[in-house]
Length: 365
Image 1 (cartoon, rainbow, N blue to C red):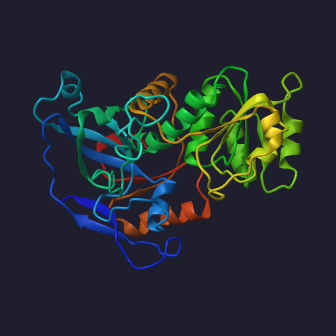
Image 2: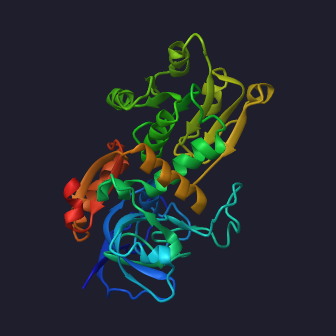
Image 3: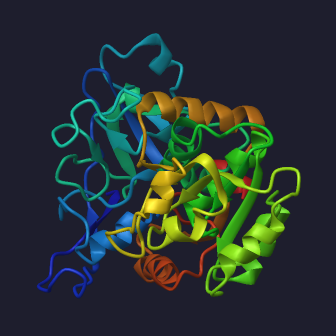
């Protein structure tokens, strides 16, 4: 029988507990009306999966499979599927990593009631940590042909989050604009880098690791600074071009003192887009930022419409998501645990991926 991967509930306080992985055998599900059956080839980790294991994420399910990112092949159709869905039979697809947000540019249409990110979530029984999954036909898009299964699995959640932060929210995803991306090496930051470079932006990055900055430069960044340095903001100011010696936007996933560090570098009316706060749940706001008309914009995930736009951009520009490491087998609990350890230690540069099947489609790796 096929496998699924969940977390096992154990006693412990949030932040101190670390739920173990649990491998389960489950039957192959049957698609209902307007549903499709997908055989998953690869799944990928996100920080939310680590937070789930530490009980630092709301609405945890111990019965729904882990993971929101997946690449798979459509193997069966339910009744009443559209002609478009019928055309996907035996074709590779990417799974939408969330539910309940169709197209509203401001946010989920029914936030707090219908919107949910899949994977160990009480709001949805879906999760990509399984060999077969049934989803509504609207919850997949054709996978870009140039992507391997691992690259495809690496894209959905971070691609959607990065696309919304840069394209939908920053107002500065334009040729010649100066963009700072903090914490390069993480999945979202790297996708923002790839999107920004493809759109003609000038990109600078921060990292705690010089080697990661060098890799980012190899991907098209203009340069970067070590955020552990006390004067990194001054160093960054010295790197900006004389003809445009300011930042147009900052795309940030850390929070902390990002406002104080970048307010002098941002142009009047510049934008800080915050898609995460890994340094803590609070940020300082300075009067200096108010006087300079700086906009702070919160952003997380994105709509189905934005997901479709993002995947089409990846297809058109032949963008290949960065994969840090791949382990094989959903039953390889030791290997999967090692991916979580990489994430804990911040070792990764790109996404951490599980190759679920050894199909011929994986040979492009």
